[in-house]
Length: 69
Image (cartoon, rainbow, N blue to C red; front, side, top):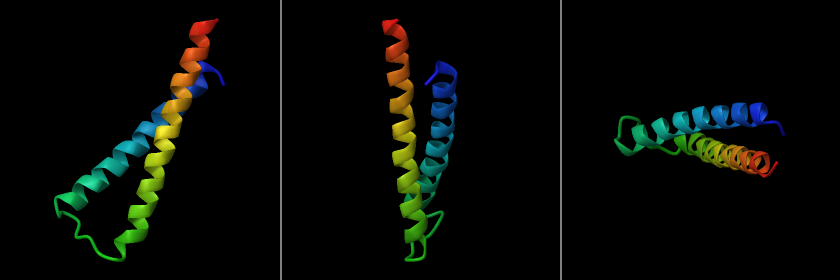
């Protein structure tokens, strides 16, 4: 993967992470009342958190590979 693609991947991952973080903050501050109907949305944001973490791992691994050259 090129450094440009890895940077775009990490940027998209961080935007998704920011959206998920705002959702978690709203739930923890009771701005959004937690209910059973929110459980599926909560699972989706948990999955987004995992995807964002993977995208950052790809970015840093690509940086590492470019440093070795």
